[in-house]
Length: 517
Image (tube, rainbow, N blue to C red; front, top):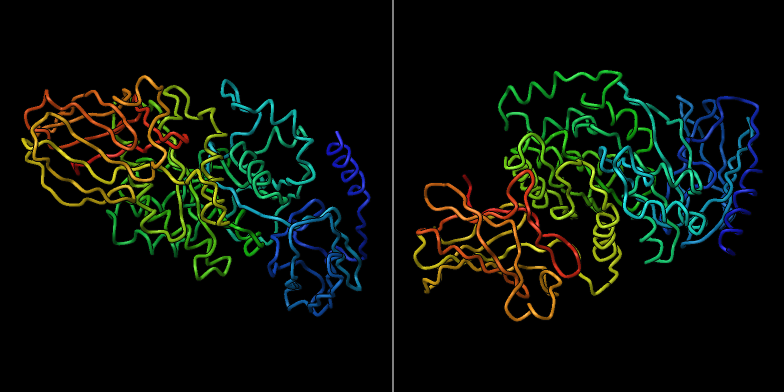
């Protein structure tokens, strides 16, 4: 109750903010508003517009220093302010001869930019016939977080030219605001503020059904795929045009409307949840994602790849044929971008999908994986839980197999392929990043292994057969006795299957294969 009353008082005080100006030309960019969060302990840019040649002074209350700039020929001004350690609320005064602007209820903390398509966009309240687990509780308890979570929901439309500003502002996440905020982003912010004990700001910037190409410029698309993919596929990217009533598909249109206006705003990192729209680009999506991240980091002046990029694999869904491997091929390509993008990580959704709903309800589990990545890798916060997904580091076939031994590298991880000296009709898989074990199995099963599903084995005929498997600690043993010469193993390698393998802490094992067929 005390926290709720405090948040209510903050809201009331913020509504009294001062905004006086004699000239409509004098303004601050919309990303700077009441209730905003500055990235803590950094040099953060603040910018806006006034008459050309005008002097503008920015004075934050945390240090009362005056930061001064003179507008350029286009009337744009920018200063860099030294932000404090986490805390607040503060105020920021912006003064020119043309007027005075005061930003109230400003916090200093951690800021993350969250983009993607509909699985990032799905709000806490859910959608028609698409609930979000924990959504009702999150909305009802939103008042407890109004003093430490702030939300900027960007809703700018597609544009053909770079835009200077957006028409959105920061909000306090009361019940109604929380209800319409990205579930993944909100749950991430809620867990992060509880784990770190600092305010968290989330810039929510998704658009359901979008492709990846609209989020970057042609320069970066060309660097990724021109001359490296079939000419028809490349030309298709260039020829796409947005329909006003449809999701963004035209290159640069989201870069122009939603990224360019906020470029450089001080943030900690990027969260990305997209892929269904590009699923059939499973041979080159990794290069597009690599170039999008390069584009964004360059926009933020990040030449040393310090801004982390954490993304989410697409979940199982029937699509037109649940047995088709297209989704698994795409996930393989998504995860391959881990090899291409420095300072990146992935949350895996292999056990979170729903065959008949493309928007899985278990968004808290996605956010939890993203938060663990951020805590362990970005904040050096030793949780003891580990982070990242379990993956196979070795697959040993029986001696009767003619599989070629060596190392393969797919899905962003290396797998050692070997043959056993025994012909015991089993394939043994050893998993990395699973020190706590696989499953979460009952005491009765822990010494003999628990059944797990989703595994298939093929011989040289390339026909895959479902097989039984058991998990014990960090190993899975697959029964391939019914196949005379087992040479290939797959797990969850379909649009949708009964794959259910995860580590004890809950992170799913992604779909994978040992063949390259």
